[in-house]
Each structure stands twice: as C-alpha cells, then as structure tokens.
Length: 304
Image: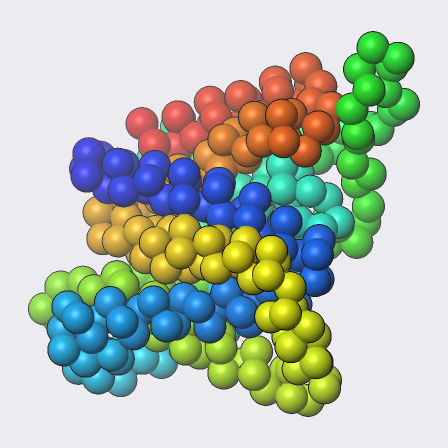
C-alpha cells in the first residue's frame, strides 16, 4: 500500500475529528441546517481564494464536462443529502456514536467500488469488512443504563431516528467517495483534489440555496450569522472539514482504493473517544471501547 496515501488519509482523519467538534457545537447553538450552508459558503470562499492564487482562476474551468457532472453529483449526494443527515445524527446521537455509524461507509464504499470501479479486494480484506461491521454494531447496539453514583457522566439515548439519520449519512458518504474517484479519473491521470472538492461544494451550495428558498429558511441563516460563537465554530470547522479534510480525502483516493481509503477514514470514531470523555463528559463503557478496537482490527485486516 502506498505510504503517501496512508499518511494523507490519516491526516484527513485528524481534520475530520476536530471539525466534528466545531460543527456539533455550532449546531447546538443555531441548528444543523443553517450550519451546513454556512460551512459550505465559507469553504467555497477559501477554495476560490486558494485556486485564484495558485492557478490564476477561482474555478477549474479546464476540467472536462464528465468530471463536472460526476463531481457535482458527488457533491449533491455527499455534501448536500449525506451531510444534512450527518448533522442531524450528530445532534441526535452525539459525535462518537454518529461517527461510529458513519464508519460503515468504508465497507459500503468497498462493495460499490468493487462493483462499479472494478477494484480488487482479497479474502482477508472482506473478512476485515465483516469484523469492522461487528465492532461498530457492538457499540451502536449497546443498551443504555443509569449511571452509577461514582460515574456521573451523561449517557446518550440511541434512537431509531438517530440511527436512520446515521445510515443515510453513511450511504451519502460512501456513494460520494465512489463518484468523486470516478470523477477525478481522466485520460491524463487524476485531476486536482482541491479543485474537485470545490466543484462538489458548488453543487451542494446550489442545492442548499434552492432548499432554503423553497422552505423559506433563510431567516435561520440570518440568525445563525448573527451568533458570533456559532459563526466562529462553523468557520473553523469549514477550514478543517470541507476545505482541508475533504480535499485530503480526495487526494488519498489518488493513492488508495475507495474501500481502503474509506476504512482509514473510519478511524474518526476512535479519535473522537477522548473528546467524548473529557469534553462532552459522556460515559464510555468498556464494551464501547472494545467495539471500537474490534472495528480497528477489522480496518487492519482490510488495509493489510
């Protein structure tokens, strides 16, 4: 496995781990929906400035039509539809459980890549998929109980709505990754990851704008922009999430298969555990930790 791809994928994990904390904090203050469009808007501004300085043009006009179509579809499914449900899952389940469920995007992307992109996986890698699924299931199916007098930490209630939001977000992530890799492939090689992410963000921003116009929700965006803390959290999350994190994720796809890259991305729940304990004061049981490490062992099998 290319060492460069692994390093890039791990860097993506750290960016997403921290950005999730900012987005959850902003969503709790002003709601997940306005945070979504604001973060995409901030990311688009960053991309335009970056590409203007680097390439002399704020938008990748030189990308072929096929790339624009596939990357736009990826943005609609991943950034728009998938992330709406991800933000709802973050509020409903909390970052640890939401991202654990989101890690199922790895085996899902592997299956989709195997079918549509002719990606090859060995027997022990499919075994890794099964082990990863088992570890995630061990955590999300954990029964809630009352905390003891010694452990006075908050327990999150796992609701059917939260699980549904998480599953839909996971499907959006998996399909978005596969479409992104297909969109970046060209006869001359892979297209630029930052420019590709900007196209995804443009498509998502257009969809969000239409959605907010039809549902008359622009007033919520206005209110969110007036909340300085929410705006700060969203902006910081946008830098680490859509701008750096997603661009690095697409860059990792240059070096790794869709399933392997997505599996490394699923390390986010493990990195979130310290935040859950020390920042959010959640009770993390031994079973939850064991499930997380079982998932990690599955990732090891998949990437070995």
